[in-house]
Image 1 (tube, rainbow, N blue to C red):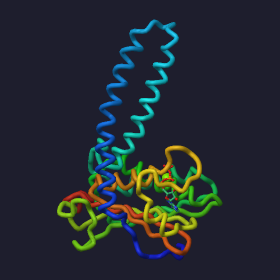
Image 2 (cartoon, helix red, strand yellow):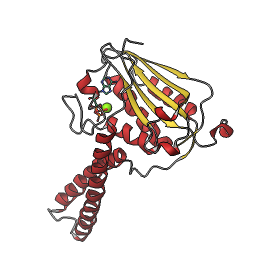
Image 3 (cartoon, protein in one colour):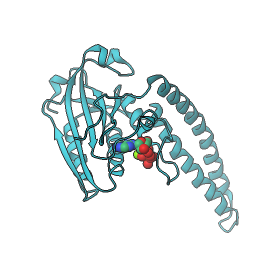
Image 4 (tube, rainbow, N blue to C red):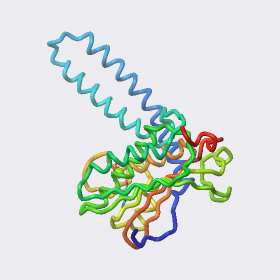
Length: 256
Ligand SMILES: Nc1ncnc2c1ncn2[C@@H]1O[C@H](COP(=O)(O)OP(=O)(O)OP(=O)(O)O)[C@@H](O)[C@H]1O
Ligand SMILES: [Mg+2]
């Protein structure tokens, strides 16, 4: 599909690690402070009479704290301190379910599912993985305002050590599942491609708080000891790849 540059580009690992460390620490410390504001405002609100004119203001404070906590949660996902848990996960079944939901999203966007045979079982937080794929599907749809095609593909991959970009390569083994989301949108220029995964990087001109979709995808891939790459170049079309290590001994577990 498309004529994109076939070079797959992973994000700059050092820059992303530094940003993730900073975001994780910031979110952790902010959460402690927000917890204190939440706790004390609840106490104060509880001690007020129901007709106290300041009670509404206290409620505003509590809602603002909840919003800030939601934002910090996104930073925690990006930094890999997300509170996810891993269990054996059948990627084919997960994608089939997701494909059904995604197909119903927009009539002018066709979704093709291509789940190749022989996928190894992976050890994953299914809801986290689904969240990452939803961000990729959402971006693909947004890149095609006039309609187009998305291909959601999963295939097994065996890689030599030199091609493994896991945060902890020694634990990754050599078997992986590669999930890709490919669209027929316009692609992206190099200056966008280089900054895609940074938190708050967006080319959207509207909607506050945007620019956190791909940073979440980055964090979710890293949590699973996997990585994300993008293929997009001079021609139209973009393809995002999520590469996740198979569960050790996954061959014995192929049918769960
Ligand atoms: N499939 C794609 N095709 C072209 N450009 C893309 C694609 N996916 C992402 N981008 C570019 O990457 C930017 C960052 O994406 P990201 O998902 O992180 O944030 P966002 O979509 O702008 O906002 P949010 O996801 O928070 O609503 C987008 O603004 C867009 O410029
Ligand atoms: Mg997005």
